[in-house]
Length: 104
Image 1 (cartoon, one colour):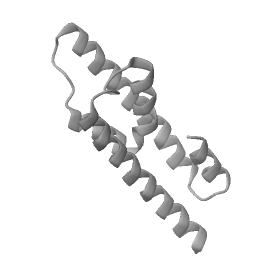
Image 2 (cartoon, helix red, strand yellow):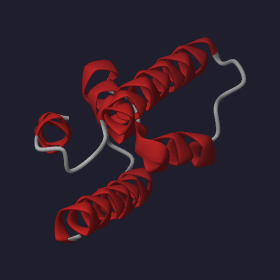
Image 3 (tube, one colour):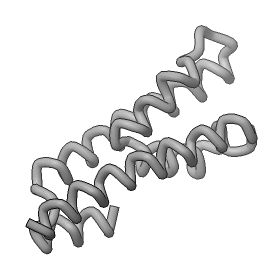
Image 4 (cartoon, helix red, strand yellow):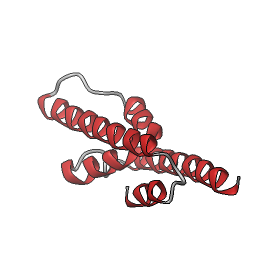
């Protein structure tokens, strides 16, 4: 998130994109919290696909925070591999966007 703030400060990404990251991160955190609560209660769960999609759409900082704070989905190796891939794809997209704005 600090890198995104820096990129916005350097005008490499627009402030609304930073705000979108904050909102999607909050949404992702809440999805993880709801899924953790459902897991504890034995209730209907949120699909891993939905959790990954939230991260891919920019909510990965909130998802990462939720994984650490809630101890949810942090030990499942297959989930973590896909999660890391979504972070990489999202970060690459932002880098390409910022580079494209900086380049011309």
